Length: 245
Image 1: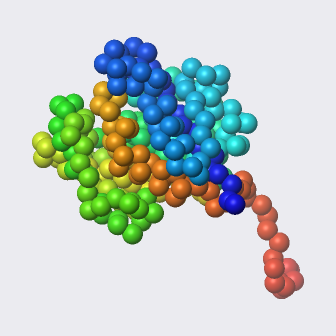
Image 2: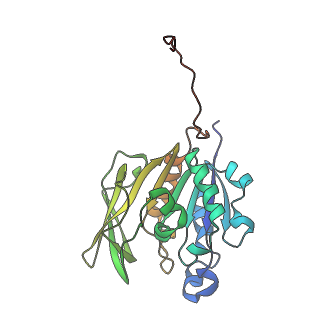
Image 3: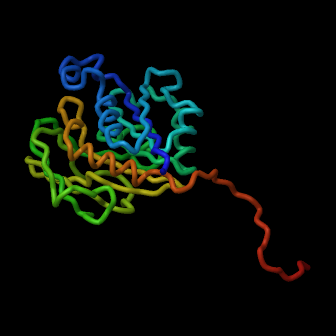
């Protein structure tokens, strides 16, 4: 039997402590909802971590035993210590998967991995979103139809300042007329990165079965095929070389 995928679900954990509206939707934090859904898949071992944990819950030991890290942040991007970002980046380059959710587009780790501002347009009006599946053969869209809808969301609109995705998975349309690249895949070093747009804190988006399915599929896709340090060795020739003068 294959070993389970080891997932760490990270959430800054600020909104639900400071905003009563968010607390009503996610009384124990959205990370607990995501973790519960992933645990129910049966092929994953789940732990959670938050900003207030020692070393933000992302110690060397934790990351060494994490195959895929999911990340949600919004209010406290600047509170994440740079040495922890360095640590996470190193692990991704060595093969750990990274899934950045919603406002994590402005997280230090996502901007570090993208090398761009990751800026976008936004509007919070509780409008409808339709997510179109533009990669029906991709593992992340397994079990997802041509599209699915969310009744009330925060709008994110183009231009989204990111590098061209290696693979575009979802394109969103919003009731106000905007479109957005809502599901994007990259490889960096040995690691895989997926950005997934939905997840505003005042709406019950992480309870949605389609959202849960996409995140679970993304975890399986981002599960490392290799964990290996990046080095720059002087490499011995495998074939005979002519004598040096």
